[in-house]
Length: 345
Image (cartoon, rainbow, N blue to C red; front, side, top):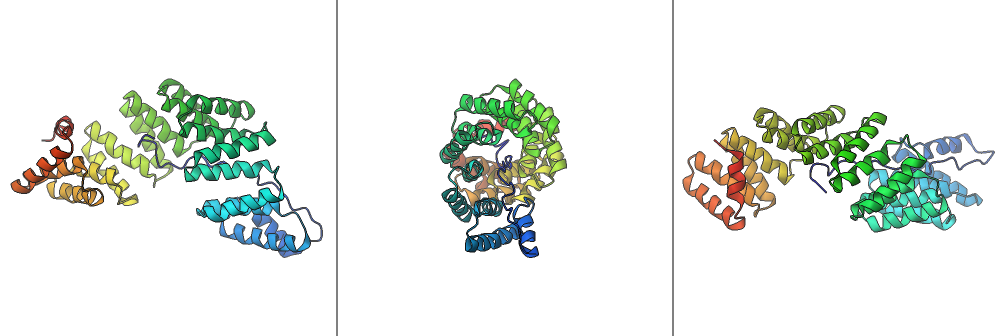
């Protein structure tokens, strides 16, 4: 996936959090547990409440399938995929026709990067409930990740037909069009999604489309919209760092590079990019520090090694600079032409 749109939190498709507990005569504490077990805004409290209901219901022979499903959703929120999978599996043992659990398990596999299993679970959900739009979105995302953009678009078409007012299908179809380099249709879908919901994911995606079209000012505008909504969005800052460097607004580039480093100081691309900005600003010691940080992560990164060589040469370390430049050229014969395009003073 393009660096311009990676790392952003894809739309989370949550399904099946429907009321399942309808047993009369519950104690007040159990009624409170019921509410917390179904509250999508909770995580740890939801896990505790669902666990209480599972223990109580199991002891009385009640159907606790919904509690396992809801607890699984909460475990996913915590990133505890092992426990989430165990809960989803148990829910399906109790009720093999619980379509929402297949959707939720498929969504979890998407988050783990297991696209084949995500698609398989979504297919099972569709077979059980063919008129629910959510599994089409899950399967479409999985197919898109596996390279089947046409199959993905067909699933997103169906999701939109079933639920035309939900933004996620438009955004994911926009991403499929982006991956096909069908930029105009990608923008149309992103625009429609943003009319429905102002989402950082979609702004980042539309910005990436503008990058693909070479419309850098429009890309910058969208990345800036992202950080206004989400001040800790790494991708937007990282891309603004790069975009402002392209249009030679170096002070703006530096500000955004530094925000990206604040969020993730160990990202090699950001360190390399900020090193380049410092180099172009003739702040050689700071450039060397960032290039050193990048090379600590990957000692064979020719771009960072060449940049450090230039910074060393300009700061008076001729022998060290020449050694870096020679090593970088041995790793990547094109590194000189890359730096020539930067027009470093």
